[in-house]
Image (cartoon, rainbow, N blue to C red; front, side):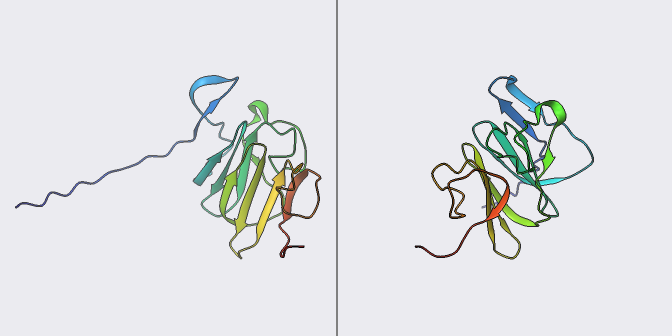
Length: 137
C-alpha cells in the first residue's frame, strides 16, 4: 500500500460579514502591516489578536465592547487598539462584550455588563478591560 502525503496551505485575510454593511465578506480596513494571529466575532463587533498579543476591535461600541475607552463605533476607521497595555494570549467576543486572557493568565473583560458578565463585581459596562475578580461571594 502506498502512502500519499498532502500539504495544505491556508492563507488568512481578515474578512467579516456585517449586518448592515455587507452580506458578503469584506476585507477589514488595514492601518498598517500588522499581522493577526486569531480573531473572534460577536453580534456586531469583532476582535483580533496580533502575533505579539495586542488586541484590536472594530464595529459597534454602544456598551464599550471595543475596549478603547469610548462608546463610539469604529465605523469605517477600522480596528482600534484595546487600551491598557496588556499582552493577551486569547480573546473571545460575545454578544456585546469581549474577554481576553493575558500571557500571565489573568482574565480581563469589557463591554456590556448588565448581567455581571464582566466578572468585576459590578453591573456597570466597562469601556476598557477590567480584571475579572477571583473567588465567589
